[in-house]
Every structure is written in C-alpha cells, then in structure tokens.
Length: 348
Image (cartoon, rainbow, N blue to C red; front, side):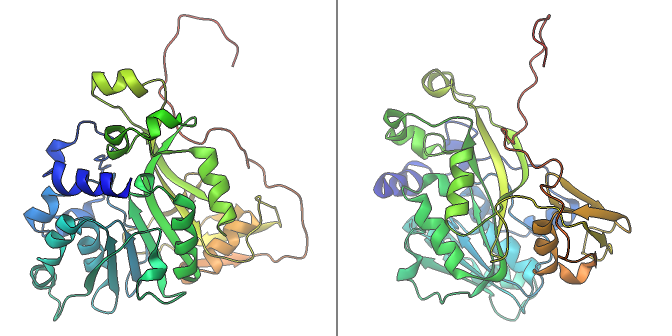
C-alpha cells in the first residue's frame, strides 16, 4: 500500500486538478488573517497541495510543530510564518517528488516571511515509523496532519508515535476523512479508492477508541462536514457509505479521564489569544465567550489549564467534589449529516 500511495501522489497526480473526487482537497473557509500568509506560498507548492483544510490551531508563536505527511510543504510553510523565528516546523513525507518540491523553496519562504534563515526542514520517512528518524521523545508542542492518516496502513502505529513525540500538555491537531460505518475489505484494497482518501478512512467510532488506546483519553472533534464524491463511477462503488472531513484535537495529558466528569469547575476566557478577541473554540461543543463564566468538565479544565492555553484563561474550582458525568457527554454519531426533507412519517 505504501508503494501504491507513493506512486499515486508522486507520479499519477501532478496537481490537485488530477484528483478524481473532492475528498482529498476540501479547503474550508479560511480566517482572514491566514489569507495573506497563503498568498506568499510559492505557486509550485500550492499546485501540489492535496489536503482537507489548512491545519492552523491557535497560540503558535514559538511552538515546535511536526507535520505528518507534509507533501509539498504548504502547511509547513504557512505554520512557519505563525510560529515565527523562535519556532520551528518539521515535515515528514515518504514521497520523493513531493519532498523535492518542498525542499526547493525553503529560502524563498524565509525571505517572504522576513526571516534570517529557514525555520522549516523536511525529512523522508514513514509516519508509522517515526522512531527511525532522529526525533527525540517529547520534543514537539504540536503535531499536525492534513488528510494523510487515512492513507496509512497502520494507523495505530501513527498515533502511538505521535503520542511518544509530543511534550506533556502537547496536542495532535489534524484533519482527515472518516466514515459512518466500516469500509469493506475489498474496497480498502482498491488502489484508486484508497488514493482518493476514501477506502482507507476509519469508521469514526473505531478512530475514537483507537485514539484512547494510544494514550489520547478524550478525543475532541473541532469541526466536520459531509463530503461529496462528485464522480458517478466511484460513487456507484462506494456511495453507500457516508464520508466526512473532520478535524480532531488529541491532548497528551496523563490525568484525562475516559469520560467527561463534572467537578463543578468553570473557566473565563480573557480574550487574549491572537485573532480571537471575542471567543475561543476548543472544540465543536465548547464555544467560550470572552469574559463569561463557562462551566466545564474536568477534562476540559485540564485541556485549558495544563497546556499552552493556560495563560489565556481564569480557572474556577478544584477537584474536591465530583458530581457525576457532565451533562451532554454523548456517544452517537458526532458529525453533522445532510438534512433530507421528507413529506412525513417518523417521530424523531
């Protein structure tokens, strides 16, 4: 499968126009502050981009970031502008053709962003075998990935390696493709469907349980949207499965619990994160307005208090009293589905 994916992204695809579906190339609406940065990315890097949205979490100044499956380097270069000269970005990819494009433009982007020297480097390797690269344990603040983990034949190894490389309190923040049910094996082995980021997609609940087994106790869904295949021949083969582009964040915090437990705690957002003066979005269910007391579960309290976000919040409460499961902690399909209007029937 590695060789098939390398051939598909290194030789078959020459630009995003060569993709046969929209699954691997689904940029969501970008915040205004990111648009000037992307306008400075080299045209060749942009042309060879096959991701599902720019992966840019908040509070990046001075951070050390690892990009798994960095491709032509678009996200690495965009993040290099956000981490600044005191930060650093490392990209890992297995495809020679993509690495050649990324490597060719390091000096160009350093000049574009006004840096004395590049703050990006690229390594050839497999994202399942990061232990074969010269990357020390607990050496990264943030690990990102953009529509790549679905292409890995060993997703558990990817998450275990990511957990090893993250600093305590660090996070894995990444977008990928997920399905509403398990993909049959005969479709998983199809090179075209796999290369188009469809048949390698994990069933969402398998992913949640896998992340927990790898040390990420409470996976948080940040945003999602349904994917359209936009190719009749491919849709006929795999259209019975729903696919979603989704962004998750996984924190490396040892004390996180398997469920959202209520300790009567709350936070107040100070409005001090750059580009987020009025609110902060931790995940899909935590839209925290500036200056407002916001009740949180114990895990959310730790995600804000034990990470790079701590300086931007006031924290209320302690761990003296436990009140059970925090209200709203559910286990059904987390993604937003299409709304299909009906003439009637059904009660819920």
